[in-house]
Length: 459
Image (cartoon, rainbow, N blue to C red):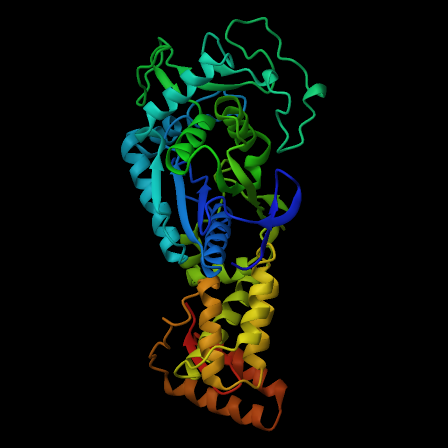
């Protein structure tokens, strides 16, 4: 196998990746909490996961990809207080929690399909694995890592010497929680494993357990389900960077206490998409869905291309202008590749340079630059086509499936297009720009490649 290097958040360094099981890779990704639609910031994380998987597959590995769906237990506060987001979403939508979970899970999967994100080998729902979570908690209890409170069973984080290593938490500097009221955590980093249903609470999702009727905490589900499908120590666990200080830290703590491992050999995290210099979030009620981009006239894969332009470990600032540029560039890539005709042999030198970048911590911006060098190169068109299609096994832009849309161009628009072509021929760029503007006013766009001019209706 080829040499691959990834940044491991646990070790805080880029290091060589070697699978634990020869040519197979166990990959677990934290999936959505299905109380609302995913916003495009969430979807950037899943594009990163898909690129990671495609990179591993290009390297020749069989990837066993498992992804969870959180449909119970994710409370509104990271301090394990507040209400279950599923209950809140149920009131907002008018659906019961089970119906709502199915609705938003289907919407999420539809978004992934639109972005050409491959489905995992296993989708696992928290509500389908209650017994696995109870068994995990029982093991922690037997080993002395839990304590009861009025509202649940909690994990005693102070019993681990290296708790918080993933996030480099200064646990010594954290203040202990005041033990005045019965039911509060004993220490600020302790977290809920099982929450009790309160006597005056009417919950839609609750189960019997050795400790009383209730529901699992958010963190226990991922430890229990990932171990169930991939084993107690597998290759890669990934998710958004917001999971580092709490969710993934607590997953590691539970697994170290129960199984003696840090759960995954590599911990990898995708960074945020930012808008107006602020983190995009569903909590404000003001967020962009993939459907928002579609309604604005963009193809889903224009957003995927946009995400390829930044490294997964760097924040990406969203703007409509940047998305416009990505959309235009992607359409030029499609039309150019289509005009090349049939694919021939792959250029090994270009493929080697491409793989050098993607196998070096998924450097997709550099890989994209190699693709454009290929397009501008003197290689035969058939070689360019075959090589670009090989690149697209990782890019995931469906270049092979693109075809131009037959559009009826009104006579007035065609006349302006012809005039613009004549202006470009004599290098009257000012007139050509004026004619482009007039064409746009009539509802059409003009895109130029090295060999053709394409006219499309504005969405």
